[in-house]
Structures are given as C-alpha cells and as structure tokens.
Amino acid sequence: MAHEGTIAYIEDIARHEGERVVIRGWLHARRSSGRIHFLTIRDGSGFIQAVMSKAAVDEPSFLRADHLTQETALIVSGTVRADGRAPGGFELDVAALEVVGESADYPITPKEHGVDYLMDRRHLWIRSERQSAVLRVRAEVVSAVRAFFDDRGFVLADAPIFTPAACEGTTTLFPVRYFDDATAYLTQSGQLYNEANAMALGRVYCFGPTFRAEKSKTRRHLSEFWMVEPEVAYATLDDIVELAEDLVVSVVARVLERRQPELRRLERDTSKLELVRKPFPRITYDEAVAILNGKGQRFEWGGDFGAPDETLLASAFERPVAVTHYPSAVKAFYMEPAPGRPEVALCVDVLAPEGYGEIIGGSQRIADYDLLVRRIQEHGLPPEAFQWYLDLRRYGSVPHGGFGMGIERVVAWICGLDHLREAIPYPRTLNRLYP
Ligand code: 4AD
Ligand code: MG
Image (cartoon, rainbow, N blue to C red; front, side, top):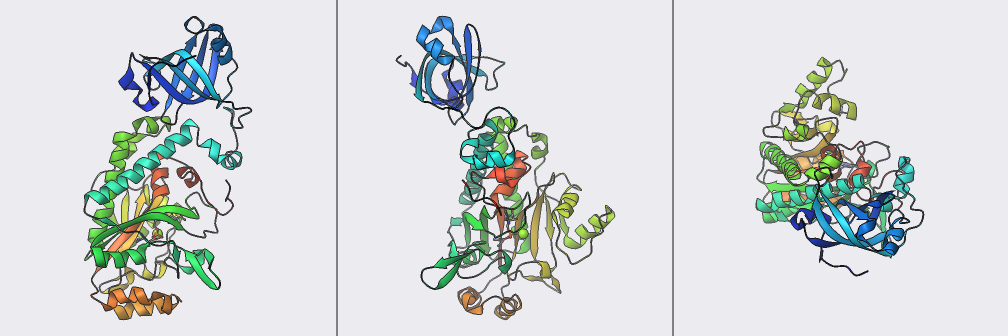
C-alpha cells in the first residue's frame, strides 16, 4: 500500500497537526480490540500511539497488524490528531502500514528482567523508553557543556588517550602494550596536557573518554567514563569554584529547558533541579568534618570522604555544595598547597545533592618548579615522564587551575538514576566488557 504524506519525526509531530505524515520506525507495543489496533510506534525521536481502525484500512493490512511482533520495523502513514490523553499530546490515525523488517522473539519483553540480563542485551535495551530518554538527556548535557565553554572563549584542545605516566594515582592505571617494547597507559585525565594547552591558549578545555582501573564495584564508578576538563591560566581557586558553579547551573538549566518530555518519562522530580542556582554553598573540608561529626558520623580529620560521608554532607544543603581545602595527603600530586597552611590543598570537590556525590574535582596547580619536583618524587612517579610537564614551570610559570566534571555522574544525578551504568550507552565496569 502506498504511503502519502511528508516524512516526519515523532518529536516534531505537533507541527503536523491535521496533516498526513509518514513515520518510519519500529513497533514498541500493540494492543487490539476487535475493530481497532493500538500500535505504539517509536522512531528514535519519540513514541506515538497509532490507531488503526478496521474501517480505515484494507482487510489484509488490518489482519497483518494483528500479528505484528515487538520491534518489527515498519512504516506507517496517516493523519496527525491532537488528543489530550496521549502522552505526547497527539495520535496518528493510520491509513497505511508497511512492514520493513521482521522481529521474532524479541528478548526484552514488557515483563521484568534482571539487570544482568538487560546489560547483556544493552544494544537492544537502549531502545526502551526509559533508556532512550536517558541517552537523550546525556546528549543534551554534552551539548550544553560544549556550548558553555565555546560561548565563553574557551578553546577546545584535546589530550592524548595513550600516555606515558599516571595523572591521578598509580593504582588505577590501565597498561597497554605500545608497539614492541613500550608500555603506555590509558589516560586517567587530560589535565597535564590541558595545563600546557592553557599556557599556549589561555582558557582551554578537553572533553573525552578517560579510564580508571577501579577494582571496586560501586554505583558511582565506571572504568571508562567521559570527562570535561577546563583549565585556565592565571586562575586561582576562587575563579575555579565560580567556573564550576556557572557550568553546573548552565547545564541543569538547559536540560530543564529542552528535555522536559524525557525527564517526565524518567519520573524525575524536577523541583529539586529547579533549585540549582547560584550561589552554591561553599564550605571547607574542616567545616565538612564538623558537619559530619555533628550529624553523628564519627569522622576523623585527615581522611578522604567515602560515598556515605558525601551523601550525608550534601543532605545538609539543597543545592550542590563546593567543599574546598582537603588535606593534601588524600589528593593528587599537582595540587597547590594553601598559603600558610601547606597540609591542605587549594582544591575543590562539588558534591551533588540527593546522594549523587562528587560530580566535579579540581584545584589550583603547583606553580613552583622545586615543589613540583618534590611532589613527583614523593608520589613515586617516574621523573623522566614528567620533564615536559616541568617545562611549564621552567618557562613562564603562572598560577593556574581547572577541574574535571564526570559526564555520567551528572547525567545520573539529573535523570535520578540509581547507577552510573545507565548513564552511558555501553558501560565498562570491573566485570563488564560486553556488548
Ligand atoms: O576528581 P577526579 O579524579 O579529578 C581529575 O581527574 C582531575 N585531573 C580533573 C582536573 O582537575 N582536570 O575526577 C574528576 C571527576 C569526578 O568528580 C567524577 O565526576 C568523575 O570525574 N569521575 C568518575 N566518573 C565515573 N567513574 C569513575 N571511576 C570516575 N572517577 C572520577
Ligand atoms: Mg576527585
């Protein structure tokens, strides 16, 4: 049967009210009463109910529709009708239907499946309403991040994935054989190269996949995750905290503005996200320790916060909270010590509310050559691999700083997900490398 009408995407359907359109997609679900088939069709941009009544189509089409299976690829055409009860506000009155690709025994049915079962079929699971909504929010987050930096004069300058040494501690490195006899490591962070780029270009950012051999199974850790990292020449800790705050506010606002249908599908309580405005509360590590002890969590000064500590701390505030001045001993080698108090670092972690924990980690960097040499030694890092990095302190060293924001942490928080594995199309964790 021939299709009449304009090819349309479901997300644009409101623009076609009353018109005849062609939708190319897949059958998500079907129910039938004797004289009408209700077909839920998805095309990647959204879901719509297509109503096929016996009276409106020829007999073979109507009979065919009665046997359509889940995920059959099909093209339907018909007239767009406003319907207040429909989730997207519109339905399609079907005039013609054509099957493009069969789908027998689709493994993900409307019944409950376990997470491992679904993760083994992640390549199909992403077709579901919920998972596709998350991935659309993720795309919006990424685009909001890029727009934020591009609009402010930051230059995108990428960092390599194969690196000669650690950036964030030697315990989570992934070694790779590099040609015949060298070992490379997958990057843990583009920061060190970003610092060089900032000395060349002023304000820069890199944005790409980063890798950590996280040997623990937690809801917050992936072994491959995406991080955006700005770096700014002449920036101090205060500048960095303000930049982090502006970025988070801008990303959340843009998702709220453009992804309401997805947030509704995820049943996200958006009133919590509406609260994400400037200024964020700023506390020092010392104050954070006092808050924890005040809430009955016995916490000793000097340690790093665990996930339960971060959750408890963040629960004292409705907005993301910036925690500064952690003990240098629990942080990376490159962090600038606080003036007059070298046991703490000029660093910041931004903790998201609602138990999502650290979304941003950053600092001012050590500008002094001798101190940086000492730190590289103390951390047992190979000095020869850091000579180029030390050049930045040999030739016109200036105060500077930056941070990294983990995209999956932000997506999990904005979407209200229980686990980071749903915030990326194909998660990589301690025990998952498939599909
Ligand atoms: O705090 P981190 O380790 O900081 C750095 O890598 C700095 N070199 C960044 C910089 O200053 N340029 O990581 C930054 C962020 C964390 O706040 C978190 O959001 C995310 O990266 N992150 C992870 N996300 C998922 N899985 C993991 N294993 C992560 N480790 C860090
Ligand atoms: Mg961190």
